[in-house]
Amino acid sequence: MRVASFLSVVAAAAFATPAAAAPASAQAGTAGCGKTQPLSNVYRGLTSSGRVRTYSVHLPDNYSETTPYPVVIGFHGSSSIGLFFEADTKLSEDRFSANKIMVYPDGVGGAWAGANYSSVSVDEDLQFVTDLLADLRGEFCADDARIYATGMSSGGGFVNTIACSGAVGGEFAAFAPASGSFYTDNDALHASCAPARSPLPVLEVHGGSDGSVHYDGGEGEGGTEPAISTWLGWWAQRNGCDDAGKKVEDSFGGDVHHTTWTCGGTEGALQHWKVDDMGHCWASTEINFSQVAAGELPTHIQASQIIMDFFDQFTKP
Ligand SMILES: *[C@@H]1O[C@H](CO)[C@@H](O)[C@H](O)[C@H]1NC(C)=O
Ligand SMILES: *[C@@H]1O[C@H](CO)[C@@H](O)[C@H](O)[C@H]1NC(C)=O
Ligand SMILES: CC(=O)N[C@H]1CO[C@H](CO)[C@@H](O)[C@@H]1O
Image (cartoon, rainbow, N blue to C red; front, side):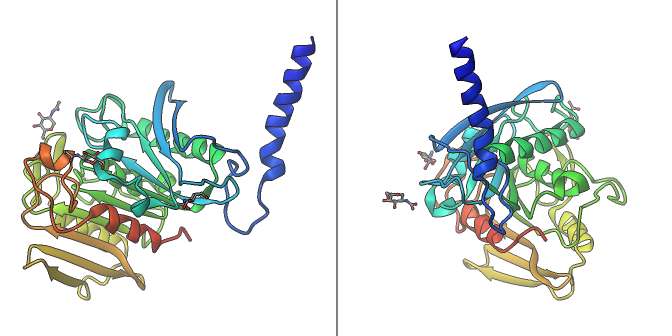
């Protein structure tokens, strides 16, 4: 009896605290503001579409439960898990994300929907993103206007699937797939891609020598992929970009090409980095697993820095 009433007091206090401590700031802090987080690395599970799904979170050093932080969700490549993507990209290191909440979800069976080898439907994985966002908002102090998605290979492809989904994609401020395998929304008129708004900021990084997700498109591991230039053309159209006025900057002896479009008056709302001699990996100036796996060496550019700098420029209107 005593224990029970003690517990009910604790429970009442636990439920009362977040609401009472919620900041009255003008920033769009989520319900998780006010909840203390004793650990900087958190592994969480939730049930989505009747299935247990998992994800890991890396919080900023000295996380303050009253500061709404930007959130970056990183989707791993095929046959992988979130923790591997985190280690490979080094995205949780302070130099890239000191003031961000980093989130790394796990795909079912190491895969994301859209690839023909995935065992879940696109609708189910999109529902998982919705449920993940709800869980994040309730647990952590997130800036609702600054939620971003990046991903590698099939994870990059899934980032495009999210961007093309009005309901889920509308929750994000910007998207950055790398070495993306774009299996969905490739129908003849690509009309199934229905972004929430225009322009929707998108940046892609791709190797010109990618032997898995060919720059010129074709048959990939999990389906047919468009040529990257074709795919960029679709986004230029959706985003209302001035295609004639796009700027191309070549560097590193002509190996690296950075293309920037101005879309609906927003400079850089569509961007592309192509590295001619790079294969299928996460672009980095430092050696890492995905490079080793692809028989690659470090390259000229650091995708982790480029992508975080890109995200910093955009807030959800
Ligand atoms: C976190 O706090 C410690 C101790 O106050 C300080 O030395 C460190 O620089 C802080 N880290 C960041 C990223 O602000
Ligand atoms: C997936 O698509 C690729 C490319 O079109 C094809 O070669 C492969 O056989 C397909 N696999 C399955 C399981 O359908
Ligand atoms: C193969 C390799 O160099 N892997 C490195 C990738 O990055 C992580 C995190 O910095 C290192 O711990 C690995 O050694």
